[in-house]
Length: 282
Image (cartoon, rainbow, N blue to C red; front, side, top):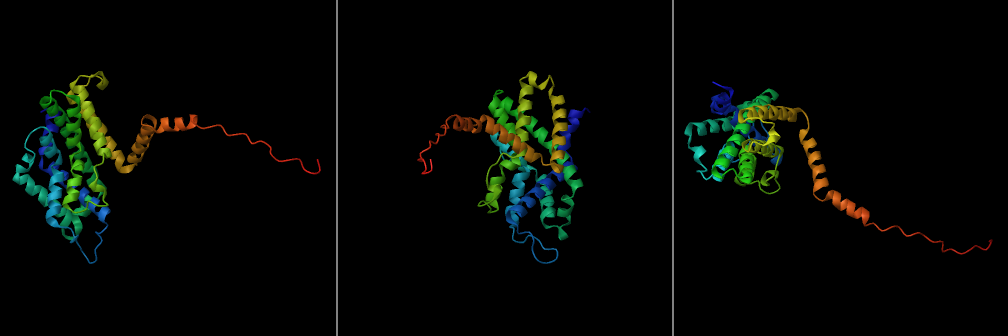
């Protein structure tokens, strides 16, 4: 069994699915806490009783299968086909219940530890890279290797949970004054866009990927993406990316040209002439 087949079978393992669903539920709960600020309830072992269980379960379900749902929608397949696996749905629902309503918040505390976050980050990276690779190649088959559809499908499948966050916000009645209600291109989506571009260049056999084949490209992007996500856990890489994007926008999208126009259109200051008369003593 080669390494490519092992990577392809990893997302189907039980432990892999448990870690994936745990990460989705943990992220949803953390974002709700940040946006609402209402988790701190009085009483020992208090739960977030004000959250509606059904809409939270539905939102978590959509976010867990967002990549496959949106990929099928863009590729002309049945969007809800990933939800046909009843056993997988029950597993996702059980993980969601543990993260949100486990006694004494033990599951939430476990999922908040650094060791668990490192493990789930590695697993989610493998899943994301394979989703992007599959999305780009399926889009190439469906749309005849058209570059734009391949980029869009790869990016959407690689960041599907973030694309469906506005829908989740509608379900939990937190659209107004909530950052989840707006569609943003986050760092994860930007990473998915870059990886989609690399896989598209591999299909076209571009010299920009230095002659790497599909299997080699998956391995290298997996290593680089894992390293980047581990760095983001300890360093403010989002701030560095924001600064770089700010400089790019300033240079190529109007900021520099606007400042140059203001500089060259400035009128020279008029020289002040002496208008006062001589004094009596002169």
